[in-house]
Amino acid sequence: MNIIQSTNEYDALLKDNQSVFVDFYADWCGPCKMVGPLVEELSKEYTDIKFVKVNVDNTPDIAQRYGIMSIPTLIAFKNGEIAGSIVGFQPKEALAALAEKTR
Image 1 (cartoon, rainbow, N blue to C red):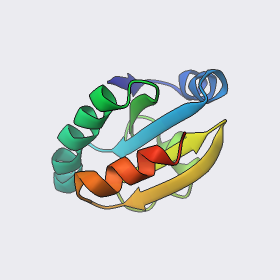
Image 2 (cartoon, rainbow, N blue to C red):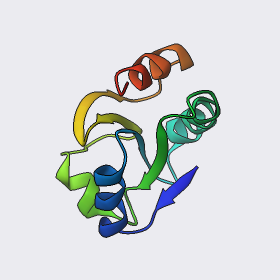
Image 3 (cartoon, helix red, strand yellow):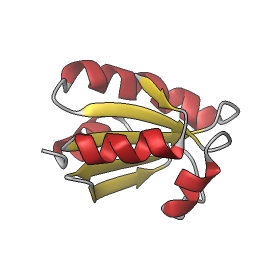
């Protein structure tokens, strides 16, 4: 799963992909470490969706764009628009339901 390194890379990703699932996280975040493997599993099951991670410490401008105050925050995009989001650790089934919103 790709980790976004810049705002330009992120903007291009949203523009060029119909279905995108973004995991906003930080390396020091315990719940982020718990949800990360679940998102990785989903990325292998939903091959038609582009799954990426955004480190809020390295690219805070992207996180600020969505008013992210807590992590992990997971946002599903369909055609560049927010289709749904989840804040905090959730079971895989809830993450899968969010991924379905991008279709």
